[in-house]
Length: 189
Image 1 (spheres, rainbow, N blue to C red):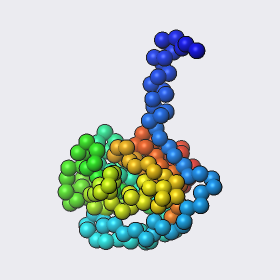
Image 2: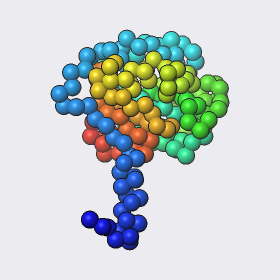
Image 3: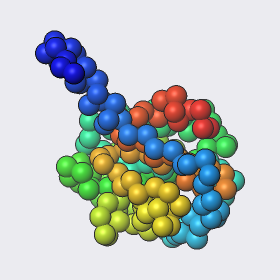
Image 4: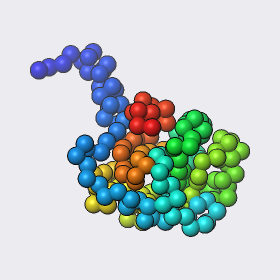
C-alpha cells in the first residue's frame, strides 16, 4: 500500500518518537531470582562502599545522570519525585561520562553541582561507566538478562531509568525520553 507523501511527513516523526521512547517491562511470567541486586556493592559519591541491601524494601529508580546534557533538567523532576514518594521510593543517581562527554567533572564537582543547581538530596554514586564491558557492577546486573532475568538494555544516553521493586526484581527500563513523572513510571510506584 502506498502512503501519500503528506501522510509520511506527518507520521514519520511520530513513528520515530514512538520507537525512540523505549519502555520495556518485565514479562508477566518473570521468575527472576529475588534479592540478586542486594549482593551488589557500589561506591557512593564520597567514595564509601555501599551494599545495595540497605535499599531492600524500597522501590528503586536507578538513573545514569550527567551535568551537561539536554536532559539535565530532569534532576528537578527526579528530586520532586523523590520528595513526593518518600519513604517508599529511593532514587539512585549514577553520574557517567559515557555519552557525549557530558559529565566531565570530578565527583566533588558533581556533588556540588547537584546540590547547588538542583537541590538534589537523593543518593548519588561515584562517576562510573554504565555502558560497555567496563560498566559498574550494578549496571552489569541491570543490563544483562542472565543476571536480572529479562533485560539486556544498556542505557542509550544520559538519564535512562531502571525501576526495581521492593524485593529486588527489575520491573522496567525507560529511555531518556521518558521523564520522571511519565505515567508509565508513576503507575509502578
